[in-house]
Amino acid sequence: MTLFIHWAVDSQLIDGWQTPNMYGLLFVSGIILGYFVIRKMFRAEKIEDKVLDTLVTYMVISTIVGARLGHVLFYGPYWDKIENGHVVETGYFSHPADILKIWEGGLASHGAAITILLALFIFSKSVSKKPYIWILDRIAAPIAIAGTFIRLGNLVNHELVGYVSDVPWAFEFQYYKNEFGMFDPSPRHPAQLYEAICYFISFWILMYLYFKLKKWQQPGYVFGSFLILIFGARIICEFFKLGQTARDFTLPLNTGQLLSIPLVLLGVYLIYKAKKSSATPT
Image 1: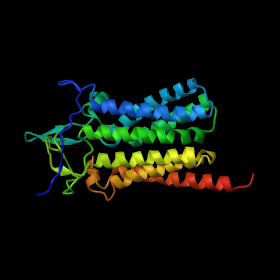
Image 2 (image 1 turned 90 degrees about the horizontal axis):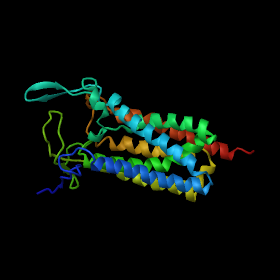
Image 3 (image 1 turned 30 degrees about the vertical axis):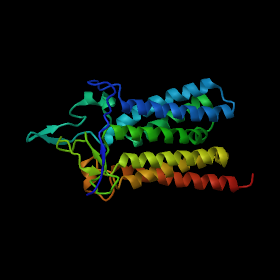
Image 4 (image 1 turned 180 degrees about the vertical axis):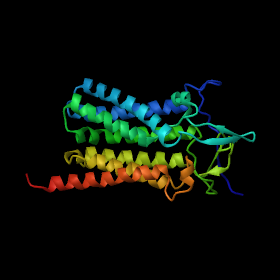
């Protein structure tokens, strides 16, 4: 007899209330932890707290907006499912008001990456007055720990589940609904947990690079490492994750993997450039 992990955790904190919930609590917890990490960096460099407060505002807004819009555009413009023998349109283009329902889950890290990069560019030009890569190196570890908690939020939301599996650590997601809108507790890879663990390990590696090895002295090295670690892990974990769009079942690589490849390559380039610059005599 094969044993599985029965996952019956309910995201609701108050019976009958969709919000506040555990997903939101974990999301906010990740942001708070990231705040304390970057505050430690800023205080070590004697940067005023008001600069950090401005950065946090930029980060929170860009993360929420970008992650949500990324999910809407990359994964949910439109799709159909069958309920009671009828095809039902459930996509955001059919129900645009659902875009605002963040508490129901649905955030894409690639969308957040785009808006965060834009927000940090504006921040570097108008607030910090430092090179763009300076803030990118310092925001890498905080984003990694925030990503860890977001994936744990996906776990308690019973979303972004993995493929059906008979491994002994497979999760039976009690509240997972399949493409037909039916509850499907089949044992599956806990893909969200795989990513959370990878991101947590990445966080500690980035902290080691920054504080112990002083890699911030090679501009771009820490952020390049972040891109390789986070999105490299994403590419691997996606092999265990159930596809989120119809095309994910027809292509060798799914949407998340295709979006991650350019970011990994950018990370390789940044590390190469950082090493080359540090080796060049001044």
